[in-house]
Length: 426
Ligand code: IMP
Image 1 (cartoon, rainbow, N blue to C red):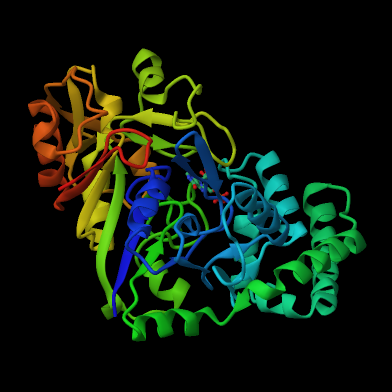
Image 2 (image 1 turned 90 degrees about the vertical axis):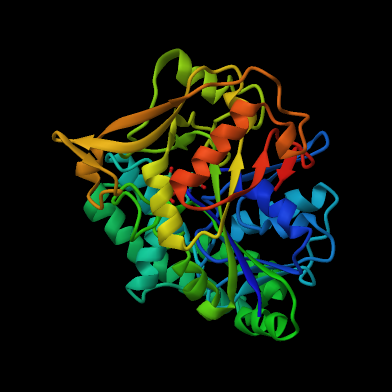
C-alpha cells in the first residue's frame, strides 16, 4: 500500500498543481480529498495554460486514473463546464479516467446564494463557490450526496426542496429574493444525467488500487493554514486541507501514507482576509506579486483577485511540517527572489514583548504578532535554466538549506519557472 500525499504548506496557491502534475507522471491514480472548485490550479504545458478547479491534475497524464473523493464537494454545473474545457484542450475526460465518489456532497444553488449573501454582509473573502454552506449542510445532515445523481429525477426533486428551504433563509436573514426552485431542479437534473456515468464507489476504486500495488497520489486543495481545524480560523476554508483530510476524505488508513510532500513558495501569499505576519506593501509587494501579465503572477486562479504577498514565514512552515508529518518539501518560485537583497526569512514572532516560536492557535494573537527576520544575502543570477542544485548560485543554495533546517524537513524539489521542465530534483 503506498500513498503519497501532496498538500499546501501555506495559505494556498503554492503551485501544488504543477508539482502534482510532475508527480502524476509517477502515479497510477490521483485523488482529490477535500474542497471543491474553490481550488485553482494553472498548469502550463508549452504555450497552453490549463486551469483545473475540481478535476485532479492527473487528468493531464495519460494512463492516470483520477478520483474525486468523498471529502470533496462537487458543483455539477461547474464540473461539467470544466470537463468540457479540459476536453477542448484535447484531453480524454471520460468515466474511464475520472470517477466521482457517490459519497461526495453536492454544492447546490442555495449554497452559492448563501455564500454570496454572507460575503455581501462582510464575510471573510471566500471564493463564493458555495463551499462553506455545502459543508455546513453536510455536517448538519441536510446535504445531498453525489450518489443521488444516479436518479436524476429524484435528485432534481431534492434540489428543488433544498432550494425552497434556502429561500426561506435568504428572505428572512438576508432580505434576498428567492431562487427559482423549479429552474434549479431542472438544470441540476440535466447535469446529473450527464455526470451519472462518472459516479462510483471510490472507496473500492482506491482500495483496489492499493491492493494491486498501484501508486496513489492524494492531491490536496487549499492548504494547511486554511484548514478548518488547524488554520487561521475563521479565515479558513470549510474542509480539512491537512493530512487528516486524506484519511477521512478518501477512506484510507494512516499506514498507507508513505510520503507527505508539503508545497511552499519561496515567499508567502494569501488571498482573502485574515492575519498575515510577514505581509509586505509597496514596491517590494509589487515586485513579488508580478504585474498580472503572466498567468503565473500572483492573482487568484479562481477569482482573479491580487494575492497578498510577504516573506517566507518559517514559524508557519515549521507548524505545517509538524502538523502534517511532512517528509519533504517542494519549494516553488525560487526564481522570483532573484535580484532581491537581502532575502528575509521570518524565524519567530514578537508578541507583547515576548518571542514566539510556535504558531499561535488564536487568530487574534496572530494578528498582533510582528515578524522577527533573519536576513540572507540575495543573488542576481537568473536561475530559470538551472536543473541541478549545485548549479544554483551559492546564495540561493544557502537560502534553500536554511529553509530546510528551520522548517525541519528536506527540500527535495525546487521550481525555478512555470514550465513543466523548470524543476530541480535533489
Ligand atoms: P472558501 O473556500 O471559498 O470558503 O474561502 C475561504 C477562504 O479560503 C478564503 O480566504 C479564500 O480566499 C481561501 N481559499 C479557498 N480556496 C483557495 C485556494 O485554492 N487558494 C487560495 N485560497 C483559497
